[in-house]
Length: 288
Image (cartoon, rainbow, N blue to C red; front, top):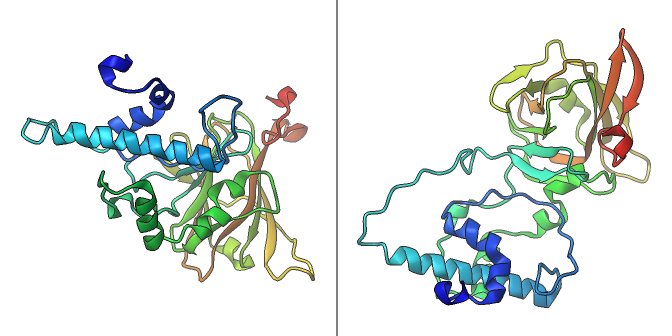
């Protein structure tokens, strides 16, 4: 294989990078913390490892660029962008236990179409161009995963203020057979909850607005030592069989999303009595 592809044996370790690059499609960007595995020349968060990762991504792009350049005078099939398209994508990060996905329509990355790849620009220069266009400090400090990492001391903060129809939500991965209680810890104005549409969906495409709205149990978590409007919100959704839930703002606000935690619990409800509470957000095999 190495002689046929002119690739080194080490390059095959980066097969996923080459596969996604050769699809010539904008990749679906998900954010979550990465952890090193005990393997030689694998992913590494160290300085040397990060440089190696970038070098092989750059090499993959050069190979793709050269391949496409040879096809300039050939008949090339026009390919459509994969669905969901770049601006339709709203899955941002897996929850801390991989039992749900965090959803929001708020983008934290600049449009990838704002940049054009040129193989003669090295990695350092390419990163400098990106950094001069877009300040990454905010996203690095307040990434999407902080909203669902089961840690009340970290927070996801959106880049810009909340607009009408902006939303946050969860993909629960499976249709839920039991009623669910959702728990939200946020740093928002209390009036935010008076202008919400809570919606559920079976397929993520067709949405049903809950009417009347579930009763919202809101508590103030702020203390004399904090300057924020830290609030907890708990509500029960009695409908079953849905997989997706989102909270949609019905008006513009002058503040950003600031989500400390977003979790859910399941209830085995019999004769309108909760006989067993199962925490679907905890790593407990007995509850799976």
